[in-house]
Image (cartoon, rainbow, N blue to C red):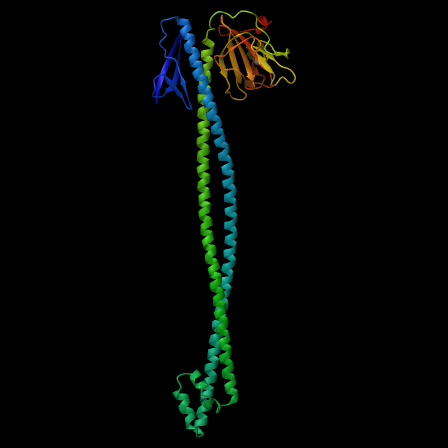
Length: 412
Ligand SMILES: [Zn+2]
């Protein structure tokens, strides 16, 4: 890719067009399509004719560029729309994750309360167990006193057994000893031991409950972590989409600027384009077969703020009706890309020779292409309201050597 400037020399004016060339000689690469342009080596023979040919080629190329830019613009707009919808989706997703995080935090709060409560319970049970142990020890001491008293009464084997026992529990299992002590002591101690066991069992249960709740809390912690990760991903996604959106908007602005520059080139070239050959003859006919009402005349209007360069034809239900060629000739310019609210909208120009051209603007559709020969009365477009237009109408101009004139002086 390289840049090459083509100079079109004309009387007193030099137009400078920057065009992008591909590596192949003479092939103009305009984004999606390749457009071949004529080599500018026709400088010596028929100056005016070759200049006109150059102009026509330049117009065709610029028109094609404009069309490509419009296609790009449409694609960019689609991207912008998609980014908007993606952004909305991501925002909804973020909202959902935020809600989940808040909910999980509440759950964790509740579980923390439960864990604290269970911890209190366990501490209470531990205190109870200690209490029971103390009571058991106390009763055992009393019991030993009684055994000592029995020994002093002469029963030696009792004491020997008590002092030789490895533990209090071993001792209790010796039934022959148990038979000798007071039934009440035995029952008290047994009750205490059984109480202590029950408390220990309860404590074990609470500890198991707490372990379960702690597992649930660990799961919630994990969920929170995963939700936070999702949240940061969604935030990243939103940032990416915003960056893309920004880029698309920049692209859109750049494309629009490019289109405006090309349109200015086209307008400039068009104003210097001489009509080809001799006048085709005959009379200029009315451009609408069914509508004759003129809603705006040629000349100054809006209290002198605007010079109307043609006539406007309109009427009820005119939208979509045929626009016909005012006279026979060749289509030299077709423009289908436009900015709503600005300019001629979709318009075309027919060259009738002898310096005469006609222009048909604001169409909804154009049915001919550049280079086509059209005959007087042939349908070339459909009435629309594109460009700077407040309602469906035909804006019709007759130009002589590029200068607009009052069409009513020529129309038959
Ligand atoms: Zn008009």
